[in-house]
Length: 516
Image (cartoon, rainbow, N blue to C red; front, top):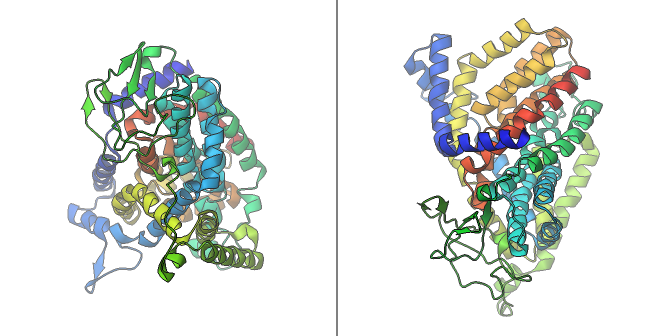
């Protein structure tokens, strides 16, 4: 049944799921239509909410529509690029390479990829996304070299599974935000409210149970979706030339256009190293397609560089300089968190941690700069799409649409049903506003007001929201953009499998919200 569900949804996604940017534009139109239908506001008023309200010749603070999340967008980009740069450092790459050689069966390969991505995402969502993508790619390549038939789109879905647990981990936006002094009081307009400690959210018995259950269930469910028919298995092939046949022994392969001379020994024999494969995605050809895989993490070790001859070159390659500044960042972070409390770590703390670790693990400032430049490619989709989702947030929040949703939850909720209904409403809103922190900034006060009205613990309310937000990430491909860039897959390749995982995991979330 699990395999059949995955295959059915994969076929549906292959036909009906468009590009993520097209999804963002479609959701923009739908949010405007919904606000027009349910709030009574006219088209010009809604356009003002989308772009930002203007008064006395200036955009009103907090009502800036398209531009209201620029600070948060920068935080998200930094989380992504610093996590990517850390994941592409030699120690982390070596670990990923060793992991890729572990699986002996196709199901083990899928399960290992999912578990690795989820464990990394619990530390940091950006790290989990990039490590998941690199693991999926390297496991696919290693399996191909050993003759192990692994369904590459399913590996990509497994690499994205970390986004289903991230909001219950150490970079969870909502749980970290409410630990900050004054944030909760400002959200609810009550200066007497103290912060909510992580012991009531991330480290609560409920969240630890949900996280443990997902770490077991998600890899197992994805492994059970592996296609049984060999003709349905799509493999990544790092060395097949464009003129070669794409069907071999009934197995359909993804053809790859190699943009450089292949590394000696890298035509499927053991010991070959993956070659960097730069270039744009190539057009579809028949039932196959040629994909260029490009990521610095797959580059072979460069040849020994000439010794620096100028003071500037010596400074650029100074390991000591990177080590001193990276150490300075870690020392400050230890002191800062020691003073405010380790359970009050916020997004800036996470960014500083990964920035400092990246400097320490890369060979020099110039090497780290190159890793950041490579990582920034994966952030292009976020940069392009974030303003549109901010505009959607402006329409939904300032039109009163989100408030209507929250009121509806309160009207039909009791203390027992509040958790599941908040989970469902947060999941629905996440499809339109796929940003945990951005969504919390708008929906958080409404969620907490409803919890107080129903005498539900605020920590549980925060986690009910967090679970709904991360749950529908499996249906919304916005955060998969960096993974798609690294693996060479498209959104329609993996959304069918992640949607099946979303449906099958719902009882874990709902059961915990009802029991605890």
